[in-house]
Structures are given as structure tokens and as C-alpha cells.
Image (cartoon, rainbow, N blue to C red; front, side):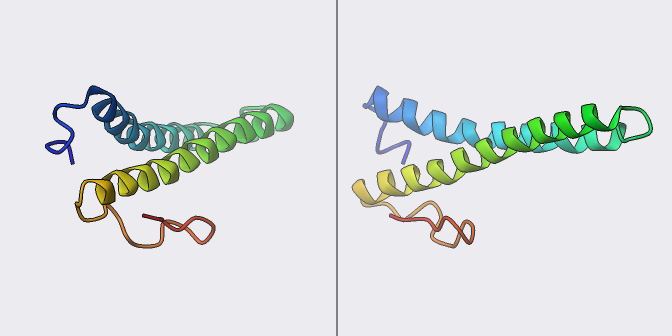
Length: 99
């Protein structure tokens, strides 16, 4: 797809944004997992722990939705350029990819 978009800076930017969403999602999961290993009710007040966990989970959910959107965007781009879909499986029960 990058080859097909080589002369279209806007399309290349969209591809870049989509690919970066995968890294952002991974980073968010990593940060949440590290935080969960470091903190619990023994070293944080229960309310502080729950607030931080809710914030981390919300961030993870937002990043997950961005990845789902990115897969759909990449698939639409692929179809438009007569390239096989990036991913044609089920992404989640709630969001399947659509070309």
C-alpha cells in the first residue's frame, strides 16, 4: 500500500497515523500492566488506586477503538488500490473489519 501511495503525501500521512495507533495501543497496555505490577491497595489508598485504574482502562479502551478504526481505514485504502485487505478476520465481537 505504501508503494501505491508513494506520490500521495496525504495518503502516506494517513497510513502513518494508522500504523502509529498500533504502537500507541501497545504502549498504553504496557503502561497499564507495569502500573498494575507496581501498585495495589497496600501502597495506595483504595480510591486513588481505583481512580488511576479507571483512567488507565479508559485510555486503553480509547486506543483500542483507534486500532479498530485504523484497521478499517487501512482495509478501505487497500480495496481502493486493488490490494488485499490488511486484515480480514474478526477484530472483536463488537467491531469486525469492513472493507
